[in-house]
Image 1 (cartoon, helix red, strand yellow):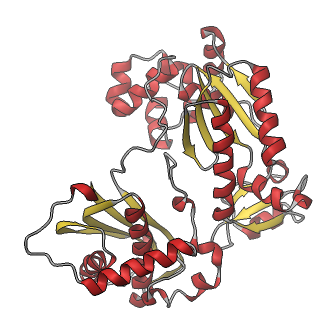
Image 2 (cartoon, helix red, strand yellow; image 1 turned 180 degrees about the horizontal axis):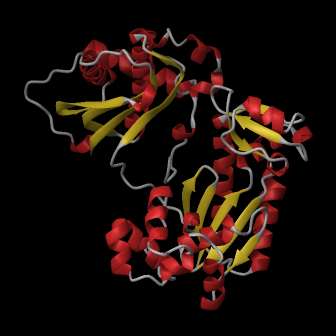
Image 3 (cartoon, one colour; image 1 turned 90 degrees about the horizontal axis):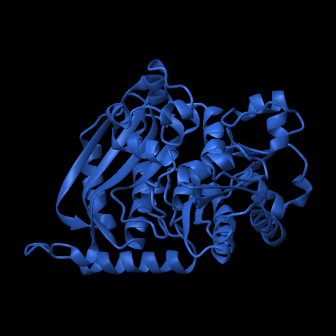
Length: 399
């Protein structure tokens, strides 16, 4: 049996630990630009506020709503505390996301034991959680999803599992997004139970091997193992939306450098090197482009990657404003396995600068020392919460 823990209104719950006066009040957590509600309390949800709405719309819907800027450094602290408490109840735990864990539930499979777990999280951390237990990860997640808020459920028998699946749309299945759901619905597959009763060969044709694994999981046989440690990355990326759409090359380059620094920090942390750097730009009017460079040997140094980024940057003109960008390191290698070139010579001065920068950032705080090329991003440097994002929380299986 597998358990799934989902912290209820996690960002808001974290803020209520620091600010108990927020308890019982409608609360919204804002994104890094302070313009969008990225999380909300149940009190705000009951008043009609939805995740993703701009703050000015949320205020119209719920004038008494209280807004707080997100703080992922603080959320990481609480997230790891949840992980540590979970490991006291189970020897095998998967750190799935910032507010979700999967665990081996053989020792805590009954409802009374789950309630004891819930009480522990609430008493020791101040975090309410919902827990679901079922034969597989996907089923356990569906059980917890339907037990919110602050509930717990166990589904073992085939009959009660089928009853649950028959009540849920296929859109509730993690891994089946809007387009895939439309494809299945056009074939008459509307509920999770319809999905389970469909020929797996048909599911594989429509949704590839991943869809077939989902089918296997929902039929009660494990297809996704518990990952107690995160597997080796196939790709590391950093990026996202920029504060204001811009066609200013100086600002765009500053954003590239900022995201590249974040990328290098992760390569250093995981002791990886890359052979290929890609940049993806999204522009207004649904325009955009993607470009990449390949290095002769694997690298993880900021200077070499910066030179590659500059090659890409110089190949493009910025007439349409950029709204979002991502930098991706592909073709990753463990540094102990790196191929060394007979003709490459590492500049000792660059190495000393990189080592000093890394030491300062590790001793004080990540991203304390930054490249001067990011100085044009004045609004970013004025707001400390923008220096740390959800992707900077390490060890998670997703994001």
